[in-house]
Amino acid sequence: MNISKKLHAFEKIIRLEAEEQNAAALSETNEKYDAARAEINIELNGRAERRFAAECARAELEKNKKVLSASAASKKTLIELRGRLTDGLFENAARRLADFTATPEYPEYILKRIDETVAGTLGDKAEISGIVFGRNDADAAEYVLRARGIPVSLSAEDFIGGFILKFNDGNASLDMTFKTKITEARKNYRTVALNAGDGA
Image (cartoon, rainbow, N blue to C red; front, side):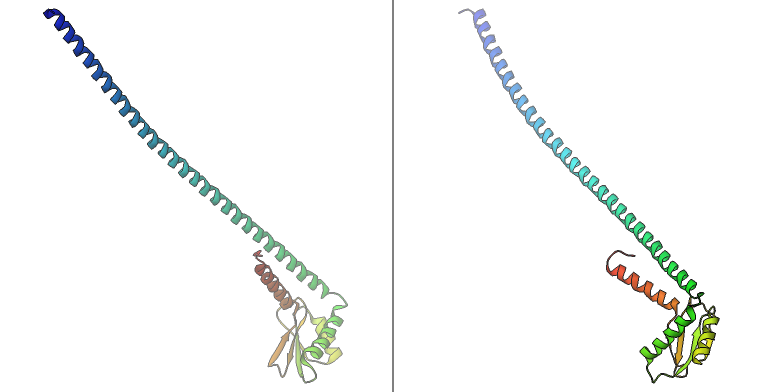
């Protein structure tokens, strides 16, 4: 074999080896590239999932805040409405009682209530020292004075009707005024409403 053929054969062997090494290097590079790309995809997917989970949590938190805010606003509105209705109810009751004090039946009603209170609450041992009426109840006071002879007086305050019974030389008294009864009724109403949980 001559030198030219040997060189040609050697060159062919070298070229084949280079191509094989090239192919192996390319294959290894492709594998590393694929592995790196897979890692990057995993990282990116992980980040995307974490971001998505964070956004979902944020959205849930915002929704809960809005729900709580709406609930608090509704509760506040309900409490204010119930307060206005309660005010209206008791103001109406006070007006009706005040109107009743201007009727001809009122003095007799007061006299009857005084007799019932004395008999039922104080009994025979009670010594009535006087009866106090509100500043607008002069007619009823005069009626009671004429009917029972018990000393009467007028307060500077408006009782909306009713009376304060003084006994045992004025050391004790019993408040039977409409104003006090309305105040007590309203207080009891609010206590019942609060215990029921509606906050009225």
